[in-house]
Image 1 (cartoon, one colour):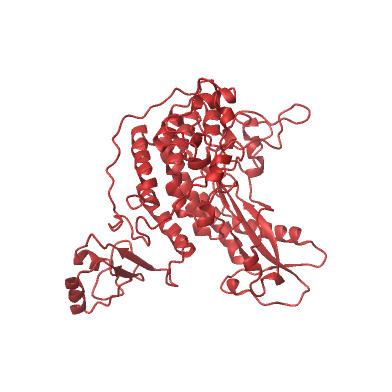
Image 2 (cartoon, helix red, strand yellow):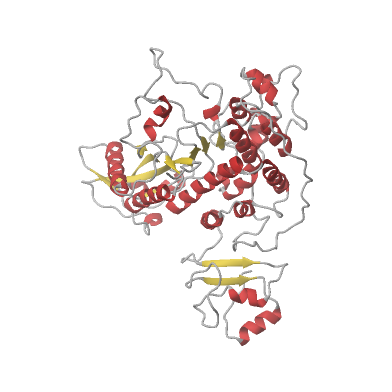
Length: 518
């Protein structure tokens, strides 16, 4: 029997869905939805919007899933009554359609022509817990595609995409948990580059772990362990070997070896530290006598990444890792470890009678909360795969290799023209996901992409490619060339800022059309 994959996942998609009374006169479709296949839910006169819309979406999902069920951690027909280790998955055996009152219609969109003539209901669609297999990915994509094709819907700025990563029914082991914490703490500023501006700002629903967590304020594992009365040892401390800091120089105009990117290194903005947010998330009462703050702790700046990472590597139990990665006042961090805090970790939720509840138990996942809301199935699946790979890399990679990447990420926080989020995704072998994400990034940042979305832009101002290499990228649609690597025959390639005058003359002599993007 084949081994089950290491990771499992679930996702929560927040959005607004349009409806109209079935008996009402037709109204125009708002301009922003004219090219969308979905249409509003027509609600019968004797039904309420909320129940009609939820029932309609559930029917659509059931039809999409029939005959295409993925590898679920716990199937809907599995008897879990006598297995307490499965009770926390009771509500994650099938798709769920709920409301999410935090999702609101922005005033500027409401004022667009015809938008206010529809009713808009806040909806959250939750997947079952699934093993990370192609069959599971196919189920998610099929369901989300069916929903997007059926309904007039969108994700406003107040909506988020939440991805839960776990180990099926089990807890993530404490030694893996601290590795994951250290890696995500270091990668947080770079991963932020792929999110839109409003998801990079300080917000209590998705705070930066690197900037606003207990650890960011230099509070030590000893102080935290004493504070939560968890000084037990689940796993022995670990210490990465010594490595010199990487040599850093600008690579802004150097090509990326693995794929052609719309953004040069240094183009992308990460976090800007919110000093009010930093002050409000400090917790001096956690600092115990004889347990000073970590080296480099300052009033208005988080501690250095290597100091924080070493602290996590040497932490000896999961609840202490959890609190180091949280902000004590507001628990909703970009990378949410609350399922492992002292009041939840390996604790049973009890009924009023003092018995373990079969109806509800705490999650055992790490939750990724920072991605912006979207209803695009490809984009959602790309985020899921990125989250899975980040957890898998941190859990299974030798410590010295993780430490090398953490040192790179430390420099990247300051030197964005040397290393950015696309370098990280490339290093983690997430090239297809990077291509999907950069399409949405370009849209968010106002970078024009042709309607057919098939142009790959190659920027390489300082490091010139040989003409033969540039011409090899030109697809078969131009009869002078053979098909280039990684490009479909229909792809048009724009070669920008990489041509010397001699190259352009040679291209012209061969009858090859070209133009520059300035």
